[in-house]
Length: 186
Length: 152
Image (cartoon, rainbow over all chains, first blue to last red; front, side, top):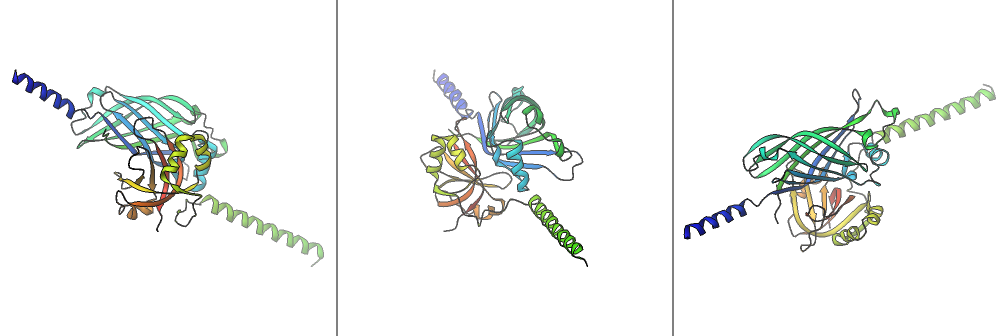
């Protein structure tokens, strides 16, 4: 009987230790690159305040960022991005809600780099579209990093690129996500 | 030189000057970079709690009022977050509250930010980029970007 109780105790203890399912960051990096091929100038920006939550149990993930948080090297480019393209005052936020396909293949307790497929919905400029990409989950010493690069078609999100600037601004944008997550302490 | 030629010359040189001015202005404007906020005067100065409250009670109104403006907030440092790339974010908040003002520091301000301690009272100014309502159970945040620590 005592042994059984001890067993129960051990089970409950181990479940307590493994209760850490959720990981998050509020300083995720999202890079934006809409440089047209052959364009002499780079149209790139970085957002350093993206929020990300990952539930390791289900593989569900959610990203959220403020469009005005994108920093361009040139101030004028940043103003055009916010005023003419992203219309950041009207649509201040962008969001991604998705999940890792075959989440069971990722061992979140063992250090390593796992290549995964992620599928979900991206909301940008008030439009929501399906996005699918491959990325990596890196587990190292109890923390998790997520990285992915994918391309979006700006037209699908009703972001119009005038033909006048077509040789500089691409009609597609390369989005690179780089988030280092920490365990979410309750 | 006839009177007519003189007038043409004057007009021409005037136009040339105008064109040069336009090119210069265009060039300056085109290559303008985001300048440091160090010397700029804040549009609003307030306590961190006050800023959070205005966003949580009326996000739309607060967006219209504060977005893109320089805001100086005073408050207690809840945490100093350093990320994997070495960027600092100062989190200012009432210790009892889940909500906070997150100040993403200017890249030239990292050295100073690294010296900030938790529970210290501080004033920071930055550009308001918006509000993250508490949708994921992480607390609500007002985000300030390119922040500078204000010396007393």
